[in-house]
Length: 150
Image (cartoon, rainbow, N blue to C red; front, side, top):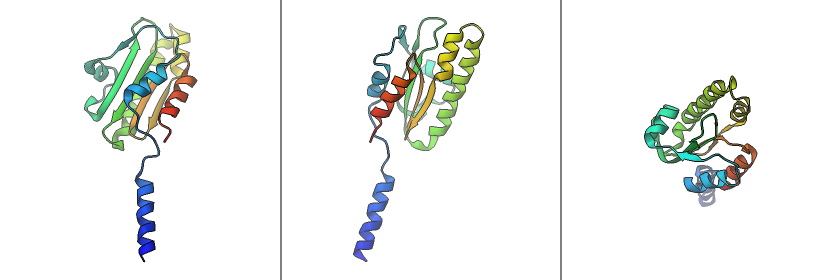
């Protein structure tokens, strides 16, 4: 009986642990930007984040968002660490809608940027949600994968 209780407790502990590490948002952000050939990136204020993505920023425990300050350039990186994982899919949906809307905005006049947006990604890792529209999306995704490797 004692062995059974220990086995059940071990199973509960294993299943309750996140499959992802929980790195600092700033570390994920910097790692994803590392090596990218970017125009000057502008950090977004809390008010700008709320306007850009139209969701309640108070869901995020921590975040970092920067976008290209150059007109006609679609580069953006947004990393959100939510207070819990319950809102992850909702926030991911909001970011995906933002990406789709931006694609449609750029499609008619900046095809290269539209392609960059089309290749952009919304990523989730536990309670983290990331929007990445960057020149080297594969390198950015790889950097994120490494940062969250448990």
